[in-house]
Amino acid sequence: MSGFMIFTVLFGIGVIVAVVWLVVRLSQNDDLYSDQFPKVSALDSLQRRYALGELSAEEYAEKRADIWAEPASGGK
Image (cartoon, rainbow, N blue to C red):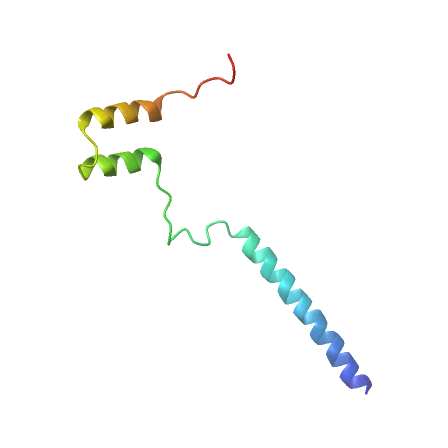
């Protein structure tokens, strides 16, 4: 009976260790889906839309200027 008890305790500890390891491993991996969802900047997206003809030259220039404009200061 004591052999079964030792096995049960060791199995329970193993399960807990595995769950903790899995949680730590997944929380440290920020780029888990980076291959599936590549990061695209706003300028890249704008250039793509212009290249596909979705934007006119004027729209492209206006939106590009908006992207490159400095953000407004908070209340000044």
